[in-house]
Image (cartoon, rainbow over all chains, first blue to last red; front, top):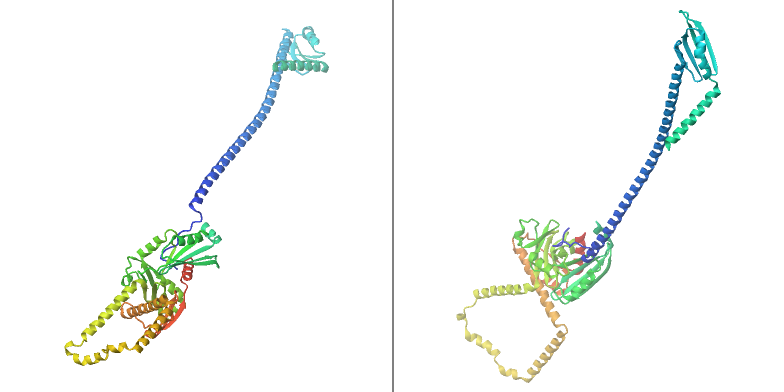
Amino acid sequence: MKYSYTSARKKKIVTPELQLLFIFFGITLFMLFSTYAFLLFKDYRFLEQSRDIVQKRFDLNISLSSMKSKITFIEKELALSERVYTQNTVLKDSIANLFDLVPQRITLSEASLLKNGLILYGITPSKDVYNFMLQAPLRSIFHKNYSSFYPDKNGWLRFVSTNYIEENDIQNYDLKSEDLEEQDTNEGLE
Amino acid sequence: MLNKLLEGLYHKIFVNIVVYRSKSIVYVEESNKDEIINSIEESFDTTTLNAKMYSFIKSHIEESPFHYISILDTSCSQGAAPTCNPKEMPLYFDSTSSKQLCYADGWSYYSSKADLHLLKKEYSSIGVDFIFSPFVLLAKFFKDKIDKHTSMYVLIGDSFLSLAVFDHSELLFAEHLDMKNNKESDELLMDSSSMQNLEFELESSVNLDDIDVEDDIGELNDFGDIEDLDNFEDINEFSEIKEDEEKFIEEEDEYPRNETEGFNEEYQRFSLIKSSLKHFYKDDKYKSQFVESVYIADGVGVSSDLKRYLEEEIFLSVFVRRIDLCAEVCELAKAELQ
């Protein structure tokens, strides 16, 4: 219940001087804390950036190693392709030489190239023509030669010539060819 | 919120000022939530705020920000009315120039806005929180009696009288009487009564023409023997009487002014109460009821004369209860805060 004609004045705990002092200290503290917060933020940003850089470096290292492996693979592919190309060239030359060996009177119907041999099917007018004109050069190339004949309708002879090179010679030949390939790749890298 | 929290930590300091006729009493009470920690009362020979009083109050209020300065309103333009209805208030007082408050939705008390402003201005250097009406003080002080009896209640201050008639907590009549101002009005009243008497005497005057002068001369002759005055014995007797009178005056001189002033004041108080009671009975706007008893809250220490006057002259049952005005103002301030 209200008894007084007037109401009580609002009681202030802090005097104006103290209020001013509090404001001053408040502003100072605010500035200090804001600077501290700014520095913390900057530090955080710096750490984040450094972490990003480390991550990027790590990623780059990974990509570098993958690229290195890719390069190695590509180099191998190159070497292989060169080898294939060489082999193909050799094969082409061999086939060309082979067909050069076949005289005009003999007609080949089929030729099978094996790893260590060659099988020729064809027609010859006579065994002699075959023996002198085809088997003689084949013998100089292959170690083992087997020939079989059977007569055709027109009186000519159909023949099957099977020629083999010995295994050791093939291996030696392979080794030589690999050495050559390695030399080529080394030269290429250099 | 923070203020409420801190309020519990600080002590409350109640500074209560009661202005008397030629002095001011300052009562300072330091209290905790429930108990009084310290209290001090100091009297100052001033009715306004002087430097000594200012430094005394300042030294106490500086101890806690939660200090409350209360003053008892003793201004003459105040009173109480038996209504809380703003429409009925102009019947009893000028409600435009007064500040009024309602007490328990039953009656209202008021004081002049100008006086309240003046009071606030006077104590502006220390500030004023509460200004209390003596009628509220009276109602709170006699709360136990007001609720149960129909009687007159008087708060006697040094320079004022606050008088109220309550009928079972319903206010019937109230008047604030200033003793300084009423001295003149009493004189005027007395003058008017004497004038009335004079008129009466004039009306019932004896025609001078009817008086037989010679008849009266004989009576005058009884006092006319001047020679008797020269009698030596008579002179001695006269001197003895004179000595006795001197002794009496000497004896009186020990408490000369108090008794005479006290006597005058008590009679003045009595006459004020009497005239107020007459006003209450005669004025039609008040719900008239016969008053048989009077409860006096004595704030100054009145003598038994007043009681005697009231009992013998207007046949009232008188009950006097001592009141410490400052302490009661302090209690009001505490109640106001709750």
